[in-house]
Image (cartoon, rainbow, N blue to C red):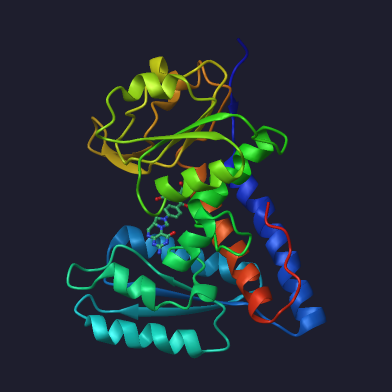
Length: 298
Ligand SMILES: Nc1nc(=O)c2c([nH]1)NC[C@@H]1CN(c3ccc(C(=O)N[C@@H](CCC(=O)O)C(=O)O)cc3)C=[N+]21
């Protein structure tokens, strides 16, 4: 069997961002609109800081306005809600992202529910979840699943009809919306999780396997149907023998790439696509708010 295609998420994301930059330029030139993305970061989690810095940098590189709101971890829930309400009303802000997780004393559900659904570029609001579940084009689609879908469609030449898709993990931010998206693409979708009886056997049936559980290198070669497309959403920091840390996915990349047809690496796979899709969603949101015909995202 020929070697698996290593899907270059970094290059793919660069393409998406170039397209977004062009759309932003058109919005400025023809509609006098500059899309704006507000990112809210509570606390000082170093990993979150890195993501936020990347988001801000790439937002600006695409020609959009970036607004950053950093708050101390002891901010009250009410204060955070008030900040979100203000962003809902701010006409310069087309997209709002509140970086998760939030400190324990703040209800993530309440904060997400406070975001105006049309500015919810994460696609976490129940209005958007519901629109996605009912197959509506109007849904804001969560960035990570959207990025995964774009890479899968590219690999399969646009059509996923009839493929057996197995999603490993049932989180609200990845697993569930990923399953809904693949179902909307007419895949036969199975979601497996920690209570599934024989995960390995379920996975072996998959033409498309999306791993989003947060368990380092859990998915082994024997779990893979030869030729399958494997999308690795996991980002796990593990310690090497020499004491240094490295990033690995939920998939045992080196062995799985021997049997699968295509695979995304970690880093350089899904992660960069997540940010690119956030920028694409912000353009979509800006178009909808200004009643401008929106560009196709995938
Ligand atoms: N409301 C909200 N929306 C999010 O989308 C969100 C969030 N909260 N909280 C945190 C997670 C995490 N996340 C990542 C995005 C890009 C990379 C990324 O680009 N990773 C690089 C590697 C980065 C590194 O070296 O650490 C890669 O995979 O190649 C990683 C993680 C978005 N998140």
